[in-house]
Length: 161
Image 1 (tube, rainbow, N blue to C red):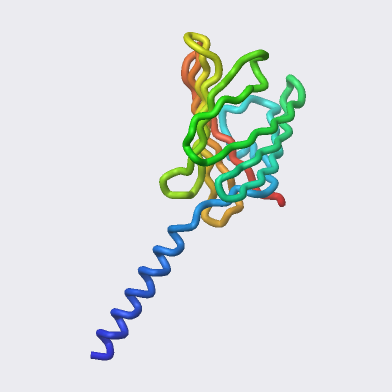
Image 2 (cartoon, rainbow, N blue to C red):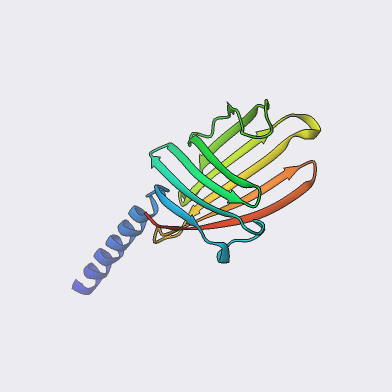
């Protein structure tokens, strides 16, 4: 009888700990350095460092991106509520865009969907940002559809701060 009670208690504790761990959502906060060796389809000479501040449903991303074409500063903010909002993308000039950001179903990351421009010239970009279980690696999968066709790229970042 004691063995049965002990096993029942252990099973209960295990189910509670698994449920509790699964309920936590990823926090993307930190300083992230691009890992060229683990990434693909980013072009030669590409490099990037990002600082992300993530609190609850708000995400702020500041980045410096370097390529053979020069250096670009990126500043973006997302609210993870799944609602579509208008934003002004840096390129092309004088263009409006629509953005929607939400949690992934498992809470391991976020999905950011942009639609820039209208009609045949519209560009759709989806970014799936996932965090490794130890919180040290951030992977961003890009899915891009525009007048040139559809393509994917992956950027992997290591946490440096």
